[in-house]
Amino acid sequence: MKNIRHGLSIGIERANSHFFLSLKVSGKLTHEDYQIITPMIDSALSTVTKPKINALVDVTELEGWELRAAWDDFKLGLKHGSEFEKIAIFGNKKWQKTISKIGSWFIAGEIKYFENEKDGLAWLSE
Image 1 (cartoon, rainbow, N blue to C red):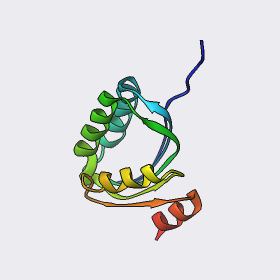
Image 2: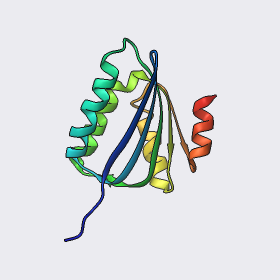
Image 3: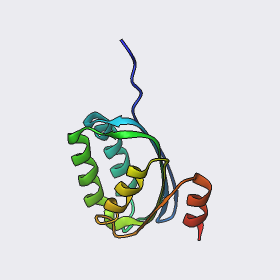
């Protein structure tokens, strides 16, 4: 049996009400992945009134979502979308750029797609 690696790695840093969230996404995301990550994000943000979040999302290893996981992602975006100021997404496939544009419809902050991490981090620090 072949092991298939998938999931989300998350890093959260906080300075007062400002958060820096870093995510690395790999494989095809499942509902179970969101059952793990959603409470972590909810818990980190629950202690702050009106948190302000900048995020760096690495989707270079993302292969897609199961249908239920895509719904989980949508719900997470609706729940916390107004808390994001900037999201830098970096990937290496045309469809990832398209998905980042669609994601911007559900997030109050700015979303930009980059082809490398360095440019994404520079934009987040502006």
